[in-house]
Amino acid sequence: MKASNCYKLFIIVVIFCLKDHWFICGADPTDGFTRVPLTDENLDLQKPCNIPLSQRYNYSDGIRSFWVYNKDKSFKPDSNTRPRTEVRIKGHDYSSGIWQFEGYAFVPTGTSGVTIVQIHGAAEGATTLQLRIYNGNMRYYRYNLVATDLYDKWFRVNVIHDVGKGKITVFIDGEEKFVVNDQGPGHLYFKCGVYAAPAKSSNFMESRWRDIKLFKK
Image 1: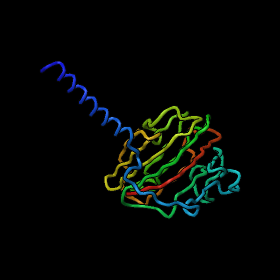
Image 2 (image 1 turned 30 degrees about the vertical axis):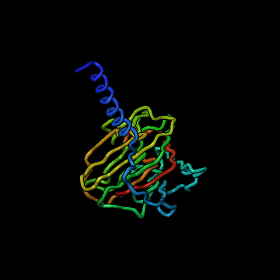
Image 3 (image 1 turned 135 degrees about the horizontal axis):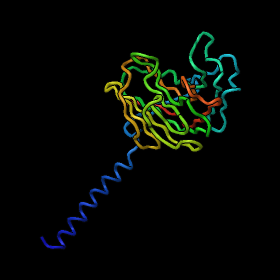
Image 4 (image 1 turned 120 degrees about the vertical axis):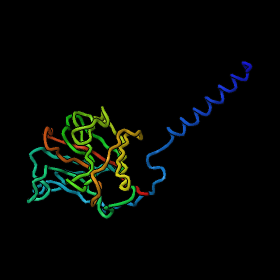
């Protein structure tokens, strides 16, 4: 084969590789999904039962701020769960299909030992997914590392739950970071905010959220 032909073949291969690369980089977690409308009626706020909402939550200029203290009471007088200030997406509970949560989160330095995203419901146990922040890093419960260096900056969170396949996929800033099997079928819904972990929680925990969205297939 002549050198000129080899060069042409090389150029063609490079173009196709770049084309595939651009396609992959241009893909978005929400591609192929349909957005589910959310109103204030779909956002059920939960906070310590003995404290006014305004002392643990603020909504201003499109940003929802959630905070809680490690010694706060639970959200119900008869509950033994850990303190929380969260929004529970209601009216769109699911038990089948492919669903996706999206939101932009901000976690300030010092907040640690706290769940900022949940899928509530499971065949066994209370939850299918918890994404927790420990010292600026995100973990699946207290186990697998999902993402690092998340303090003091906005980052995009996408969680896809394919109930039929029993699979959950987590994206941070549009990049696939973690895939895990779910906890079996159940009555399922998404939550975000701050929910103190069972142990090693900081005294003060805060997360801020904007552009909370829900999608499905």
